[in-house]
Amino acid sequence: PAEDVGIGRGHLVPSQPGPLHDDVDVDDGELRKEDLVWSEHEFNDGDRENRRVLRKFTKEFKKMAEDIPEGVRNPKLLTAALDLALACVKCYELDKADAIYRRVLGECRRRGMPWDVKCLQDLATLRCKQHRQADAAELLEELAPKAPPHP
Image (tube, rainbow, N blue to C red; front, side, top):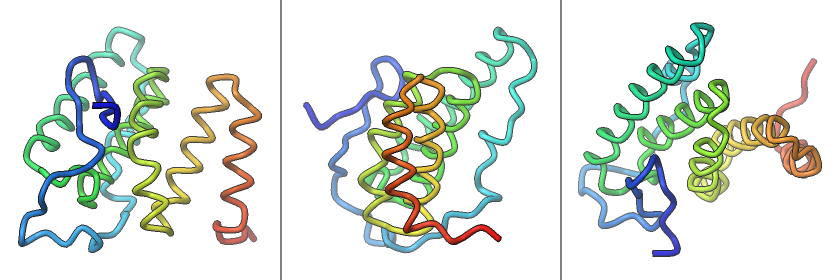
């Protein structure tokens, strides 16, 4: 369907999640820095090794997504998607990162802070790496009134 966005070749995650588990509150859940582990990887081991590590992270994400029918409305999977997207950016897998961000942006905006701030900042970084500075500037303008002031 048109609302599906690919997460890896041949693996689609529905943008409209199915029925929710009774025991999952999709609005409950925090975005915690300690849960962002894949994007913390340095990716300094050369292209071949970096791609291998990213494939491992992607496989872990896909397995997690299979077990969470509500999709990115689940805070655990949404956190993992943001984490994987930034890992893709760091590894210069920009098309993969773009697909993930397009899939999660609406849910991050719906949740508000800090989800939207994290997503918009990282998406702006991606747009810069794609040489789409005007798009990055638009995202940063959207972000400016939301983000807390820097000292």
